[in-house]
Length: 126
Image: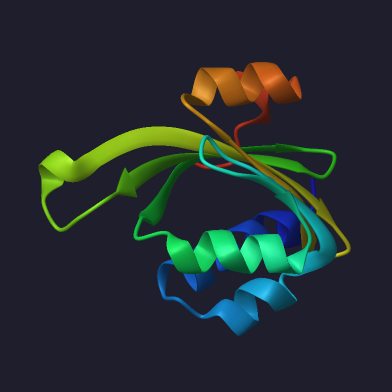
């Protein structure tokens, strides 16, 4: 795992959360694949549609990575109140410092199972 892959995913989160859509698109491949409970899409237009339409913030927690795959446990804020927070996870594929896919999962366990990553692939100490 390259630290640049993890840095790319963290920068992607930051751009999404701060509505810096040009940066988000720069960090993503032209044919990015997005799969969330609300949307399945491919390409920059689908990514932008998803990013602009959402009112959530994704705060990274535990991070796992191996061979271009990065899984991030997230606190997802739907509003200003702590009661509006849910946990979830996203699995990313990063190639040449660009996100080529992002798949939302209900739990970190689901994301790890889907990607084949294990506890030994954890790269943070949060």
